[in-house]
Length: 262
Image (cartoon, rainbow, N blue to C red; front, top):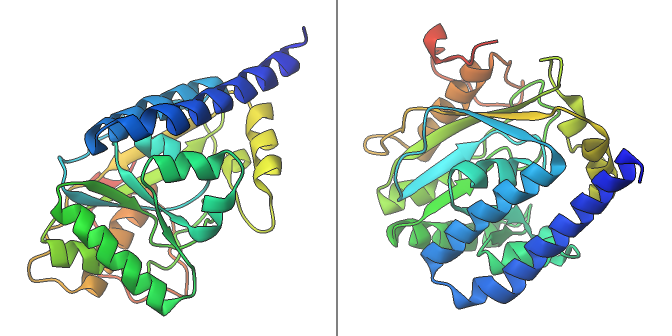
């Protein structure tokens, strides 16, 4: 059997296994059990795709709001593999074949982009989860980028951390190719379909997801906009990336010691 075909069969089989586990096993577990299951399935999924994960720092114990830059659908399994959490996804994801079921059964939150009313509802649900002791992961850019810059951070969901009185932990995320350069194959942007993105990932060997967990930000004495600005600048510094012109003015840049090596 040709290596390419074997790899596609492994990816397809892994997706079915993850779907079956989410559909049949997850409903029988406690909330904590579903987080552990989600983390194990994420590691399984990444292994099948041939993606290694490198980590600097460590996730702080729950409850905490994780905020990360957003490059790809791969961000979710990469984060979940290291930090079991509930994730926030766009509402369309709930209707995706297979992946929608996986997200729903593993307790993802879904938000209707562009709806102020739904944003308020989602913020309240995230705050309640944080108050219940959960770790919640969000991507405050609200959309993916190609990984060459950091987009605007929307501040609304930072209010959930303020209401719950829990820290915000910035997470810097990027993908490396086998030669050590930035892996453009991981980016999921524009009008690209999930199938097209998956094909690019499967064809690319040696992908590495790098995660850097920064120091947690205490909510006391900060507004949601201040939290968003500091988290965004911390991530930009860690990745040595520019911020988009649409963003609010960030605070002073962090020392170079915060930056990811290489």
